[in-house]
Image (cartoon, rainbow, N blue to C red; front, side):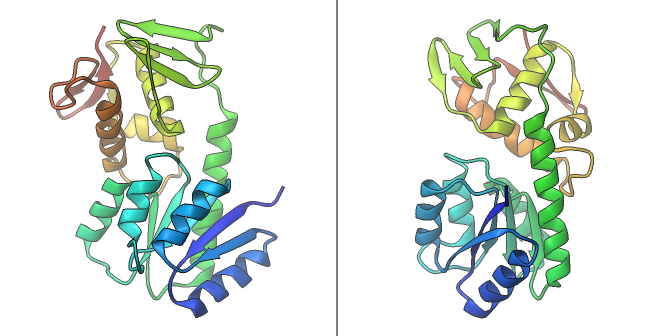
Length: 232
């Protein structure tokens, strides 16, 4: 089955070039030219990856990224004319998976797309060993490893796939401290181009969903300078 990609940029020549190049590799490509159109299309379709420009009409790339992460874990490569580190940090905070600064080589973009698609495929094909049990309960949190559902005090919480994998790893081994480096490899794969800040961002978002007070978490604890663990 061909991968389905959404390319979002208000520069039509760039969109046309990316679309043509990806279709040469037998990928199915849809296009959008502003942020609102992109969000509507993501909600209506199952895309494997999003190529997203930072500067867009109506909703900019960071807004699209933030809104998208409320309901989808689709991998996102952000295109930006700005190369400062601060832009990259902001992008990671909002959920981008990788960056490419304009002007870029289309071959490099295709290589990054293929690398992320391979990682996504591997992650989805993997299952964590939980002693063949479909349900795991620790304190007030219960997860169903088959349906990928999470309940806190019997109320369901909507997690993205990576948030679920992260929580499952920590709950399977309570009190075990995982370094940021190890969590990055276990959740995103060995060849993920991002850094350990990605783990921090996802832990923060996970805490916002499962903790009564994310600023003083009861479940996911930080071992300063090392990593994270689930408190029994």
